[in-house]
Structure formats: structure tokens, C-alpha cells
Image (cartoon, rainbow, N blue to C red):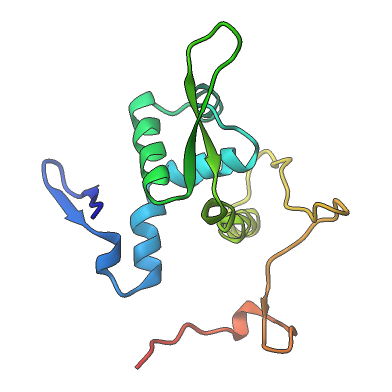
Length: 160
């Protein structure tokens, strides 16, 4: 069983297993909740696969990047693949798995929320589009008949 370390107060380490929580949000945050993790996933969605490219784009410390990549591989979000450029030694690249690609709505939701509620001095040129048409897309809730439901009309209920 994999145990994910979380650091609370200085000098105190709390170790928890993502599977230990019945809450799917808590389990997801145990894997994805570190500051750089979803940014690494974002870069993988943008086509980056190599350690040096992740590091250059994000400005992340190598030890932190190593830890985030290891976690993403451990939980099946990225997979390691060997590659070798001509006259070079074999290296590893990191490729999104189907579980990693399933994070598309998470990234789109965070991007939309940030765009709507945290205005920036510069606007991002990235956007989510339908591949076939290049038309912009947005996330929404739909009911059983595929009718859009406004987020204000959606509630999270606890199972009894």
C-alpha cells in the first residue's frame, strides 16, 4: 500500500493513505492537492513529457518535480516511458494515462473559476476547445435528460 506523506507543522509529518477516507474529494486531494501537482498535469496536457521541459516551463525545483512526478506515476495519472534520442543515453518521459486524461474537467473547472473570480493582469492564451471544430467549450452540470442545470441549483448531499 502506498502512503502519501503530508507535512503539517514544521518537524511534524502526518502520514495518511488516500484510501483511508470515505470522501472522494479528500481521497483526490491526497493525491492531487500539493501545490505543483495539477500544474504538472496541465503541462502534460499541453504535450510536455520530459523532466527538463516540465522544469523549464514551471520553474519548479528538481526535487519537488521528482516528487510530484513520482506521485502522479504511483497513482496512475502519468506513466513512465523510456526514450532515446540519437547518440544519447536512454531517458524517461512522462505520458498521461486515461486516468490522467480524466482530469480534463478538473483543469477546465479550475481554469474557469480562476478566470471568473481571480482576474489577472495578463490573460492566458490557453482555452479548452472541441478537437474536431476548435470551438470553445465550457463545463456544466446536466440532469438525467441532458438539460443544463445552473451550478447555483446543484447541492452536494451526504449519503445517509
